[in-house]
Structures are given as C-alpha cells and as structure tokens.
Image (cartoon, rainbow, N blue to C red; front, side, top):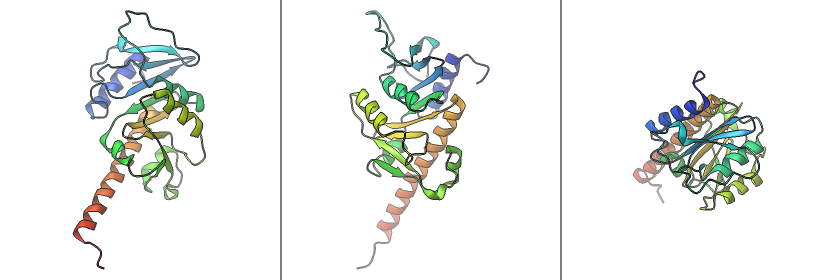
Length: 215
C-alpha cells in the first residue's frame, strides 16, 4: 500500500475489510493523519465501493468547517472519536473502526472492561507478557457520539489499558497505530482475540450443558 496515494490506501483498505465482513454496507470508518489534518471516510458510504471523493480532508483540531447546503458528503458521524484518539495518543497516524459479530458479542462479556485471554498474539499488540491478561476498555454506546468521545477522553490513556484498542458495546472495535499498516495489524490481532474469546465461552457453555455439575 505504500506506493498508493493516502486516499487510495484508505479506499483499498476499506474494500479489503468489507470483503472480510468487517465493514459491511456503510458500517465502520477509517482515518489517516496528514500533518495537521485527517483523511476520514464520509458518513453513509458503502465501504465496498468507496471512491476517493468519499474520503474527506478535515482539520485535526478546532471547529469542523460547516458543509455547504448542497454537500453530498459529510465526515463520519464518529469523527469526534477519531479526533479524541489522535489527541490522546500524539504518535497515532491511523485509526480504524469496524463492526464484527465477535466484538459485539465480546462486549457483553464484562462490564467496563474485558480481560483478554493470555494469547501469544498479544505480543503483537505491545504486551510483553500475555499471561498478565491485559484489560480492554469497553464504552457504552450512545447515539450522541460526542458523549462516547468524551468518555474515551476521560478514561484513556490509563496504565490499566495498555492495548491500542477499545470496544464500544454492541457496536464494534476501534484501534490505532503509528501507521496505517500498524493499525491494521492491531485490528487483526485484536479481532483474533475476540474470536478466541467468543469460541472459548461457547465451548465452556456447551460443556456445562452436556456435563452439569452433580449436586
């Protein structure tokens, strides 16, 4: 992807994630930092057929410019979450948000955080010792997206949450990285962890039904 223009990189990544079933229809949003600005996918656009016109350039800080009355595209409804993450973690170069069944189910497995299983893949997320079972923060969903961004700003960064990612309950996974490729790696590894967690819970539930404890 390094030889593509920034907009092309986002467009092609969106198509790739759509084909994996992680950004079906208009779900999810991607952004890439360009100096004092961001490139971010437009709201309501099908991620499998994005054009470069569907990727908008907006300022990282300050008020967003008001769209003209006849504007066909507006920045993602979750722009405030992206901007908050870039502000909290200044080295961040890309933020990715996808909707997967596993992440939505996993968000039901705990309260405000989930302890991840001690998987080797966590090393790729910056966890030197997976046996420590790092916590992944879970935020409540809210139709008022700036309220989610505000909650993220209040809880992160926090030493209890070493992972470059978070969940929004019944909504999906958000990750970040210094580059687009690093953010993608974080997304794949975190989603692997979600699949493992849900499979493990399903297996344990099945065993309990087959072999109930004797009284």
